[in-house]
Length: 426
Image (cartoon, rainbow, N blue to C red; front, side, top):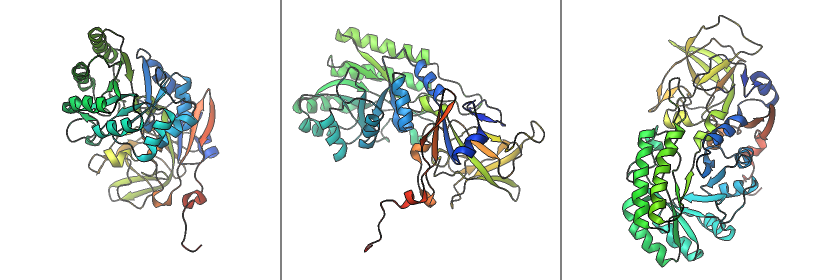
């Protein structure tokens, strides 16, 4: 099983394999990804012409390869992500559809060099990118990421629309961008809109109208539209799963209107990140201390916000479960209110907190040192946001496919931590 919003609070397996055996073989903290879940999510989106994975959610090469094998394309937001996509078997170039698209609000110099030399299609998020790209790559086509003037998300920090967001080209500047493109001898072949991560169907549906208006203002050079990402993931019991079929119908209706207006087919893309990978992933940590602090009971584990930053960044909720070492014990159904903390020398290193840093206890079964805590729905914005804070090595990562556990990232060694550092004179 994968630890999801509806999982029991006592589990023995993740992705069908023993938690204890995984921990003993690969150590902790340990990320485990269930390949079957990612494949299932891709299949759910098959009505869209293109499913383009926003790899920033989970960019391990094995995950990218898995997405590719199941027909997904990939989005890259940096030179490093272009490199990852190439290493995972994606091909550069202006294919139909392109296998790799670079989407960002700027070109750093390395990224501009790579998209120019490798012929990587570009989705421009700033007017200045049009000029810079045109100077290097005249005659090519581009797409534009448009900020429709509104946004929404599970946290203000994941809201990517509206005038407080840095993302995209402001919708009122589209006319100026058409002029810039003409001067730079590049054509505007498509539009992309993304208003935030974890938003709801009502807000997502508002983007359809904004897309139609923007596309009609540019004209029949538009051959593709992208619905962006933001599809919600159920983290808590009772969270509703997004109605993918209803969402597709909204966008398909917009696509049909544009195709009729332009007199040619218009491709419809979707760009999921978290939706594909979140529920596939679990972070396994070992409980290393059980302690009382006044009225509060703490389980302190060997994973911290250096491994999973979403709780400290967004107050994000993750489902949790306990796996007793050596098998079940105690009364079935017994629970205590527990605060889950990590090992870092930071008071904010708490996994059970709300946005603003307010600590919340979580009802969990009794546990002892040596038992395991499993943090579910950790396959998106988990390992990719890992750091070496407190000189902690990055966690190992394992992909489970067809019942087999594959080590897809080795745990960093202590020598890896200081690799590249130099003491002057040595």
